[in-house]
Length: 271
Image (cartoon, rainbow, N blue to C red; front, side, top):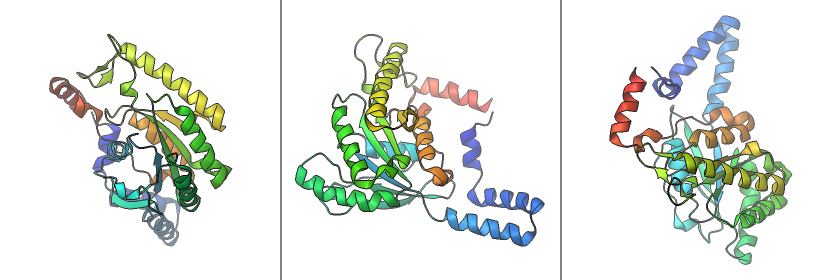
């Protein structure tokens, strides 16, 4: 059986363009079809830009690497600098992606005043602003304060492109029945209930405090590759008309299962 991910990987961007062009020619004159395809190609050549925001240790690098199946490394050089760190790299389907690693707010008033100017210049140019929060961090109030400061300085319009990811849900819970099941790389039944309940509370708090929809928030584990599609869907939704340019190709969570389980899952896919 062929999965949606395998279909996505098996067809190149050029092949997809050719298929679309042939369909357009059936309903449009050749010149008009060529013109439409030229516009689409030019638009695709402009990579989507993701502004990445989050406190130190929240898992920005692991999130991007597993979400887009890339090998990206953050740099300590961004801390204390006067500009955000921007990098462009290839992702699936012959496409490209721009990641803008934003300097973290909340370390000091002096730095915040300097960094907020970077936010004011950078966020309006981004297609989506991804703010990451740590699920096992009780200091959500500080994240709320930072996001409010960003909105206050960058304008209410930033909410339309703001996506929030609650990372490290695998760290929630402790004790019998509340641990991650390494055999199948999924939360145990008890831990899943805890994760759902805890993250629902966080999402409601963020929604009420910031005046945003709960649908703009997703919880996941970058390290375990758990619920990456949920995060990706939120990012695509918050990217608006540019969302179609964000490639769908997270790293496979089953690769982290026990080898015996992974083999069975692979056979199930093939059948």
